[in-house]
Length: 84
Image (cartoon, rainbow, N blue to C red; front, top):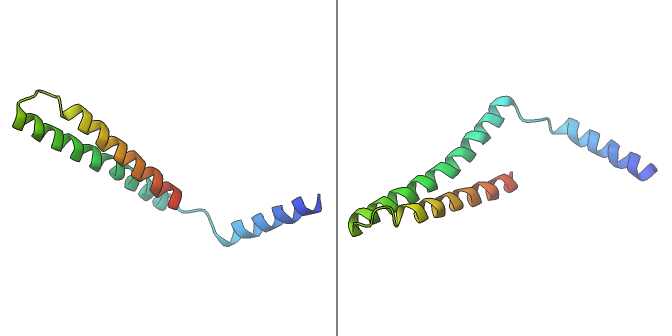
């Protein structure tokens, strides 16, 4: 019981030393995450559309490259969130 009380006191002191980020900082993080997902997705779509035009294949390349770009964007956002 005393160990739990010491741990709670340590957490309280640690929280007092490092305050919660401001609203502006939180909005900035959301913006960074959004762009980290959107940019690779759009680049994948751009590459897919270009390949579809070159090979006259409809949307054969657009759909998979869109998904690959979204996957890369989500993975990079996930990694960025865990570094913060």
